[in-house]
Image (cartoon, rainbow, N blue to C red; front, side, top):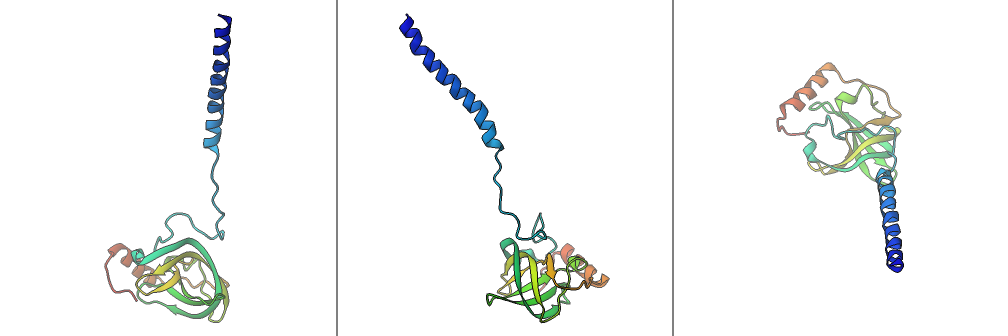
Amino acid sequence: MRSARRDRHPRGVWRGLLLLLAVVLLPAGCSLRRTSAPPVSPYCRGGDPLAGVYHPDRLHLRKRCALVAGRVDSVRMEGYDGDVHIWLDTADGERLVVEIIPQDRALVGVPDEGAQVTAVGPLVDDLQHGWREIHPAWLVTPSRILPARPLELARVRALLQDGKRAAYD
């Protein structure tokens, strides 16, 4: 009888230890959080990276937040949607557009042509035009603030609300 009792006792101890380990380690393991890489810039925004962009379906999001640097080749104000187009030549020989949307022009400055700048925002492929962009730009530096005029803001509000499929310039 004693031998039968000895056989059961070690199994019961092992079961108890396994149960205790499961009860202790399972919640501890579940509380471990996977940390993602820190954003490339403190200017990266949360939420929808294409918020406020006219016809975002024409853009393919490559990177939620990217930082690019280069020389400003040209700056053009778009009359249709009020965006500012900044053509940038990057150090690695890439040419891309940095677009500032009217809603952000009170926060995001416009650089001078020829300036060496850094820009932050979503990196996208513009499928309609066939080029790569930072759109919308969340930071361009160095630059100067050129707030959108009320007419430009009203125009983009109407475009965003109407959802009309007009040709995009």
